[in-house]
Image (cartoon, rainbow, N blue to C red):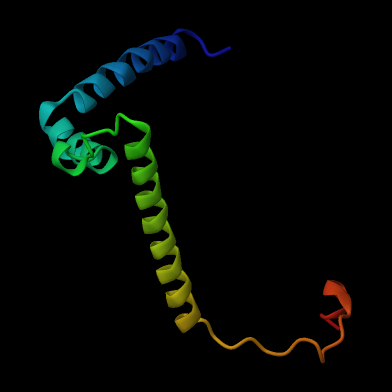
Length: 105
């Protein structure tokens, strides 16, 4: 087997790794530089969120109609942009299908 030197090395490693992880990731400067910017990407600020939730059925329906209209407008813009950037497709109806393996020969 490994002997006592290996056991001392493993014990030292088992102690070293968690302690160094706590020292590195527990540093307030590291948290400020790496965690807070990512947090702002995940969760929008309070002024960018919609705080007034509709309370009656008519307001819910109006809000739902507004959201659907925005989604439809974005979809139409995406389709239009994709149509403009789409390259012309070659006519494949005149080509015969020989299968994926026979196309190599």
